[in-house]
Length: 315
Image (cartoon, rainbow, N blue to C red; front, side, top):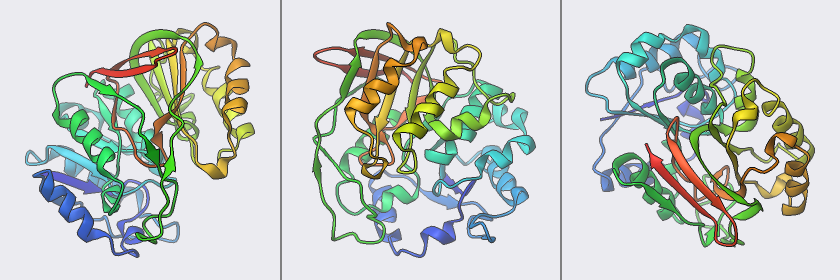
């Protein structure tokens, strides 16, 4: 059974758009049965629910022996509010798949830092409401969560950056120009990261995972313009242990961010910590579609050159 919880925004926000039939069909195709946290539809003035309600649903999901995996409804802004109240011993004693992205980055990296467990950056429950152009997202989800062999990743041929949940018919496929090899090299490391501005919220707390030996996977949404991304990247690279990172993989930016390959290369080149390390950008994760599923706390290999490759070696 998969339990759906709402650690950030309420499911009531998602239910404003009637896409649940597509979600039900996709999980049926995967042979997965869904259940929902008791408080997923509670909603306050910040479109979330009380800290206690969200903590209770997470604890219930981890402690229920019938639950094999936990999916988040959607992202938002407030998952880090839960961290002081989570029972880390309970979570560590009941390892489960936890998958989501964006604001869920705070939970995922904190769980890895506090318990050593692997969590997964990947689609939310709501992501599966996308009617069209979701085949790669679902295939990567299955490969990462149910496969045992290393996952060999390749760039998607096309991508989308639209409010698909409001209009399933008026969508545009954008031809991909592939991954961007910004700095050549090869590295193997433990994956840390997700949404950059959310990861930075953990700095200075016991919830920040060590960056020593890490392969950083970072992305941000349309609000992260080049200057914002540059200073957020500088911040994470100034944390203790950052000099021990082994490489950087950057997710695709949304069009409204106005990030370009040239600007991103300039931003990366300014960071002395990254000198001599492989840096691969425009990879298929973040706030565009399709979206990779990758293990935070798992291991990956990246080789950046004329023919760049990305491989998840341990889930």
